[in-house]
Amino acid sequence: MTMDWGMKNRLSRIIKKDGHTVMLAVDHGYFMGPTTGLEKLDEMVTPLIPYADTLMLTRGALRNYIDPAVDIPIVLRVSGGTSIIGKELLHEGIIASMEDAIRLNVSGVAFSILVGADFERDTLLGFAQIIDEAERYGIPVVAVTAVGRDMAKDARYLSLASRMAAEIGAHIVKTYYCEDFEKVVDTCPVPVVIAGGKKQPERDALQMAYNAIQAGAAGVDMGRNIFQSSNPVAMIKAVRAVVHENVTLRKHIRFSKRKASNRMFFTCGSDRQ
Ligand code: 5RP
Image 1 (cartoon, rainbow, N blue to C red):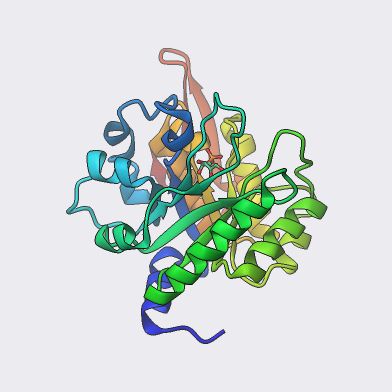
Image 2: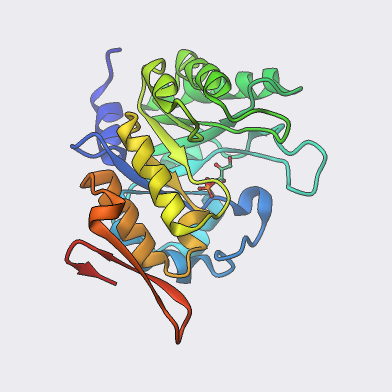
């Protein structure tokens, strides 16, 4: 695909020279309100920013919590409109215009699609509209392949949803890790990043990120497994080492539990946290 300089420039801000990226997802408030860990979003996110390649969030969070002088590429969530307590959680539509995305000087926008759900057509048509508008201004679009409760998070489904997202025009696909993840990556012509999903033990989340990178993923767009960790800064540093330095868990990352605080600490290479 031929791309304009602006599109290439923005993509290079999201995915680094090594082809990898650590995107920090803190957009949860758009459907979950004050999510655990993000009650005071600025206090959580500010110390994590130096270790993230990209920050993914809503325009309200950006304007209210993030210092405009910060030097980090922004991926703006532009889909939403439903809530965790409503009946149609994943029937999302457009919640921010491309004009506002440009005003906010973003490097990309993110939109959730729900392949296989009752409302798949609405989400896919909204997504196509966002692609048209974003292409006009050279803004990359991250397709988030959201998964409903009844759907299997397996390679068959996730490769279907990821490939569809790319065929409709996504520049990056965010999906879930699954067994045979190579199949998802190999059949998707654009970079694939994984969501973290629900909080799991740090070791498991890091292993998942490691496996995804080995399977060919470009990186992670991880939220709860970082900001709900007992030590978010150490966790994002460890994720970074897995994504950018290809470190293995057993060899390079050590976990120790300090009894006094009962917090998990990571030692990653020479970097002690
Ligand atoms: C929903 C999302 C989330 O808002 C968020 O970005 C997911 O991140 P994580 O699962 O790592 O907490 O994309 O579909």
